[in-house]
Image 1: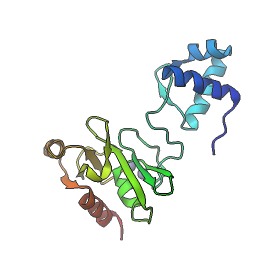
Image 2: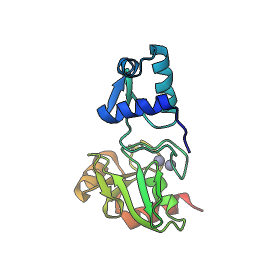
Image 3: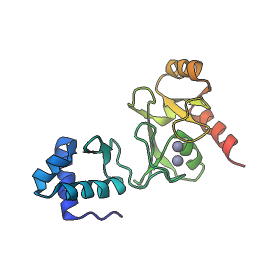
Image 4: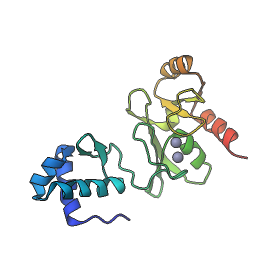
Length: 180
Ligand SMILES: [Zn+2]
Ligand SMILES: [Zn+2]
């Protein structure tokens, strides 16, 4: 899938130990020039293996080099929708919107996880509450944002608009709006 050089592997090791590194640390750890350190950070970023932080790079909370299965967009760790199929494959979509649309295909999910939009904690997607069509639409439109608690979803919808649905209805609504 992705091939990374021994030097990039070393950077990933350094990163795995400390979570985030800056260019200087990479220079020191690998004994390379600043320009090379920047070039390698760029290369890793392009492959989706790391995320940029000021002056350096960090490991993304969820590694998703493939991007969204539905629309190809880069997956946002705060919105990502992760589908584990029964055959042990992990698929990711950028947000619940794309997750709902991709699940019309016979994927036979074993489990589906997504993040709480307010807290960023992982949730069982089928037990989450969703605000559809809110004014806050950080990813795809109409937006579908997940919340662990119904009351949080309701408060959010009160402030930013949109309707609150449990999983099955949120999926049905999104498919109705998007599919012919
Ligand atoms: Zn998508
Ligand atoms: Zn999206």
